[in-house]
Image 1 (cartoon, rainbow, N blue to C red):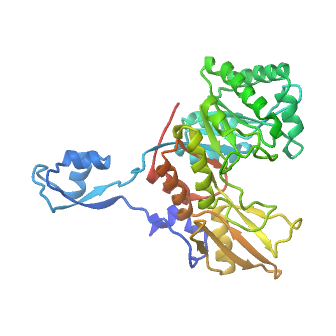
Image 2 (image 1 turned 30 degrees about the horizontal axis):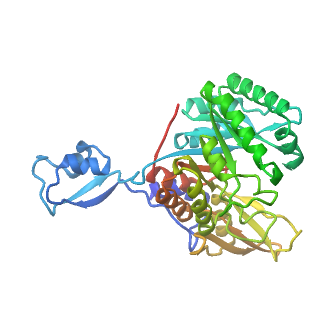
Image 3 (image 1 turned 60 degrees about the vertical axis):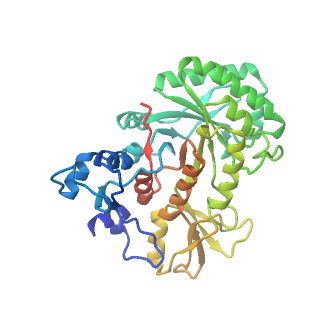
Length: 406
């Protein structure tokens, strides 16, 4: 009971909720010995030691196993291969940053403080990332420096055009990036330019080539974040300038931002519906090498006020754990949508206002990880660390071996 409680953090919830997904931790499974099996072959198959099988089954003579015999196999996990894992993190205060990185560091390959904002002259708005970087080093997590064209609360199209159309400014920017990465100890660069004018598509590709040519000789990796699209849209403020095929050729890997179908300013819906995520991945693997693709996974959901009205109150972001606490507080069942592979529920607050919540749980992230395995992708990237979701880390760690590059 205590282990189930710990994995699901049930101490934070007054009682179990109808429809709530629970992770049931286990350390073993049963295996029927087949003709020709040896303990060495069985151990190799399940990626465990011979001695661990011997001890768990109280075997006195390892040579006396026989077909049909039932063995208990310890630590039946990590059967879905190896992945790299990135987590974006928004700098807050040192104690909170340290706690987040210490709790999640063992599951991360990279951590990406969000973000260094570029200026029109190629300089950078600094961020307070020192605590994150120090703690990441202790956890053997490689930090990625994130640059964005974020300005005034949104991604700025004019700012992107200024950078991409001026080679002198680009060189200044690259010089400032290189200096920052050297001084701070960053492992690589992640470029998240969004709302680029569609007509600047080739300018963006050329900028990426220039960045790679400058950083690769210094042994820095270069990656980009791509908005999700199921085909090569060449128009539209968000989609047109992101050239999947070119990014796949130019940079070391890409992060597909496969979330925000349900978003805070839109109608209630799953944040990352598996059917639409699959459509994006289908297109991506047709033009980008699979080992260069990291699939985005949200660590959050939204709480919408009903009835939804365009221009009305924006939905509040909630953590997966916070969503379950809400459902328990108001005594409402959690439902699970088979099409989107996402949980949701409705509740009425103390003021009589109706709400609808879509979020992630153990089932929904497992569906996403199975998709990563099915397509043989490089790994996953989270937006955003710091939202409590204890089940996610258990499921991830159980399914995959996580790469460490430092």
